[in-house]
Image (cartoon, rainbow, N blue to C red; front, top):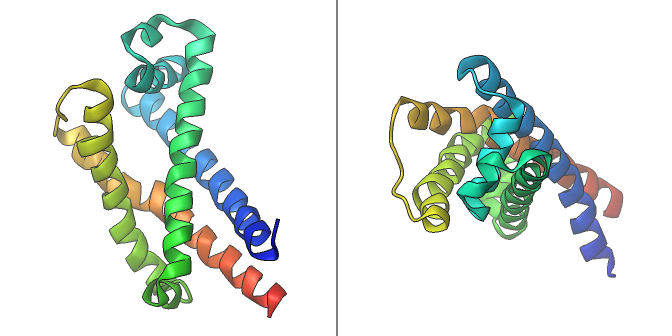
Length: 166
């Protein structure tokens, strides 16, 4: 493994873990406290999106599979952003200030939610999206609870990486 690929994987690991935990805790709290559901039902529902309706009654195994799907999506979103940050001078410049991090988060959060809810989930389920108040809330919530952790952590790990190798 080269220094560059090892550095990328190290940075990706840090970004991915933070976003998986932050978004997972947020989704669980939202489901339990705002929607009156349960931890198990939330993650079984996530599993059912990819693996079919039988996951809703799939017990602990379906819950774990839902958590794995969530972790996979967090990895995909983290990887995409980290790759974008390596290829875009504008993006790297934005990541050097808190204002830039907030601006990029305000753009990336709705992009992530829109791609998931309007493209990926309908492809996986065969059902069109349901754009309700919850959908709009999720669009807004993806800024502080998905995009900001990804963007902020990317800014931090990129800064540390530059300092260590230069």
